[in-house]
Image (cartoon, rainbow, N blue to C red; front, side, top):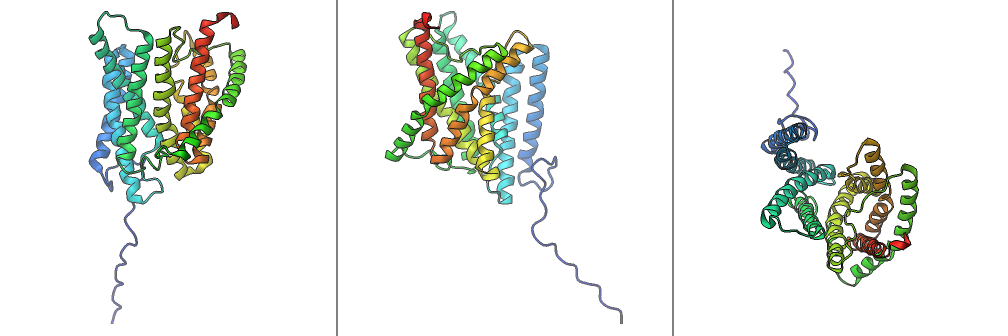
Length: 333
């Protein structure tokens, strides 16, 4: 009597899921969101390219970035869903993807706000420092809003996970620790910047130049030493370092977040020609590395956002005050 055929062996474990970079909807936990992410990203990038070629500000600075933001945010959502399904150590979107969404959103929201401000004030002269304050505030809202939507909203990380804790005595000590490191970091930055300027013969302009008036100084301090540091610490230390720490460890997280932080400050560099732009990028990027690594080190050491926030606020405030002093006393330059 012939032997019975063997019983089929059921597959062990869950079926294989497509990789995060695999272009397929099969096996996706959220296929619709995946399709939206790709389509909006491709369309947005296409409109940005068309806008650049056709010199259309509407396409280049608003419509393209707006659609691109939708695609990147949707991509962040699908990444978070897929990573949670896999049980990843960090079940959230890549910091690179979130940062790209932030850049796109800053352009889209900023251009719309700029148009609205122009229509509101008309031909009325608005001081540059007021415009700078509005720009920094809008950028901060975008920074925090995108992290809230893509990271906290997907439950990848909580605000507490990212070092935002109640400001008590312990957090005050962390804040003062950070503020106390500002002068040494400024000294190191000044030496490095002087060397780089002598090397490439390019001097970057300050994003918040001295105003020469008391009201301007106060507003610049609010923008540059309060609003901007809070927004940047939300993204680069609280979110990026925490996320990368869970995937590549502390050292890798510190290096990645510091390099991206420095790079983010030279995205909008402009110049008369390629050599000038290259020189400005070199000086702007490299001279921010000391403070970038110091901010990350403080965050990892204290596990609190208040320590890097103390350094960031004090660092920016001192530089703004020095700029005003130099403007008022040109003979010392």
